[in-house]
Image: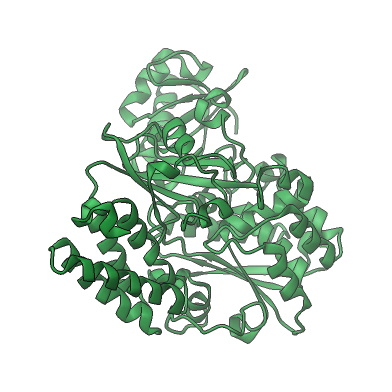
Length: 517
């Protein structure tokens, strides 16, 4: 196929604002003008307020236009956009777009550059280099590289990935498994989805490396049902990887086996917890298991199992391809590498921005995000998903790393950042956290199941002004019980948004700072 290459994203966010219609309009307009055009459906660059962002390959590099709607296409042709010429929607050379230029992309380096389903594109942009490097190593050496890189799980606990892999590698069993948690249920997060839609071979490569490291020949990806486009793209990527010998009985002709399948979740938030996910994968009700035994010892079908999320596995190919020192060269303190932050909520420029650990929330929300969409002052920023803490302005200059946030009772979690302006009622948001837990609890442990319901009632009494002083004491004791007595993070982290809202925004509860202390 020949002609000028025009890139139109196939990501869900772009599809939602009419990317398919834009692609069709470009093909129709080119045909009517007798111009040769090759439309490539790439992943998203993550600048979601500019979708549909169309890029044209010119002799000087890619030139971007956005946000483009189908009715803009005729004028783009008229202006000469196939040669990168000016237009009201012109954004200039893609590489010079400020929001991209200021990022350090490791995990999302290819996302937006390539056709997500082209293995040739993937390899041309450095894909499979990590897997080839891993095939030349002994399993223990692969694990050591992951340890040396300082890679930690990109979920809630930030557990060192290499230690988890070493535990599974040391376990003795005829069958071991690699499981990817792609049940991205946190509100305001979409990095997993973007990666599965925009660079799915990277996840496949990362899981294959994990299989080689621990001696597992089978992998499963647990994808949430709300991601039909991601499921469709990932399914096709797996089939193509298998056909090309990246997966199967002899990975890249090495004689070492690894294959994977995906399973669709049914929409339960708690199935994002690793043991509940294992139950669901086994065909059981998604309910949390007591630990020990750890899944690394007795996981899927009772076998040793590596469980990581999408972003963790997707970080691994870079570690093997470029070496652990390169990866560890990014970040701050014990938080090494980068984290793809996802900006959502009341934000002017929502999207995905991959940055090294150590930058600040103020930089992220104001320099990248541009402040609120409403134009009103930012009041609170929730970091780490619906069970993350509300971070007040006094903490916006803390470095974004795991330890700095843990020190103030907050978490980075999956990198989700939701912004609220000064019209937000933090008492109602705290109540919502308890209500969310009550609805989504698997019901196995009492602190989570009963505590969340009682939490809603106590917050209602506080905001109604009924025995406020006693109810605040009761709320704190209830949160302490949930924090320390719950079986998993569902009940254990629900106190984070509740207590942070109470501590930093007491007026929303009808309290003074002294009342809430």
